[in-house]
Image (cartoon, rainbow, N blue to C red; front, side, top):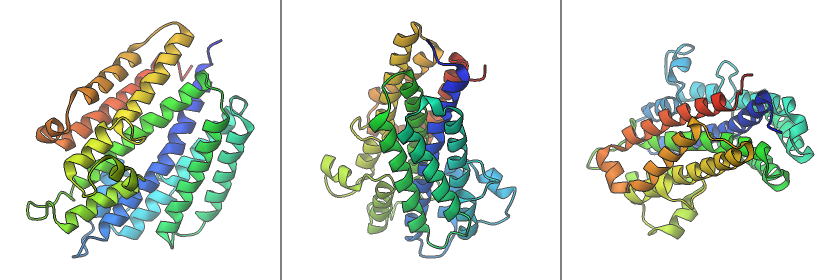
Length: 313
């Protein structure tokens, strides 16, 4: 029997917001590491984090400067920001409670406990950002481990998986775009130790530094890193891997429900675009534009999934 639309909606958004909490932490980690290379004290790195997260407008509605401590507080624990880590984990928990009977006990308890711990930690200002980000990544990893270790691979799992990998693809694109917004170095910096440090920092922010070294030469080359984060089908945070998982889950849903929708075509088109292009072609045509298009297409796909499976009925 097909899931009720509101149950599918709750599962989908529960996983999206768990992933969003972790990815916001990763985006902040990228900003923090890149800010360490700023030798003249300018705030562009932190502004770029807001732009890449898509929340600069909301931030400027509340603040009139780009002070790092304000940006950090806004993205970590400000409930006026619906994409802050605290807001995200709270919405994930609310959705999880709504669909609690569709979850294993282990998954629900990991989510609920993580919400309690993070809410308590975020009741006070952030005084040690690296430790806070590590806590967020550890708690979301615990939730994910409980989920993947105990959930039956049925349509409940597939709707959750769709939420996870749509959010992950969106955020990998945004984290990679941080490098290409205000941080794109001038030609004299390309290949320098500064440029290499920035690329290495981005790999660390997606927990991919060691796995990159396994796949490529140990030195950091922009083309190899872009290939790794965009096109490598074995890297679990890459765009290509994410869309392969999205297509797998949509295929399972099509078999379970006996029909396909527009969302299936959209997902296949995006996956085919990733598979048909080489990294040189992407760079020559404009990485920023390529990533922007993928973010827009991901939002469209999310809306089509909601429409196709009656999330709001």
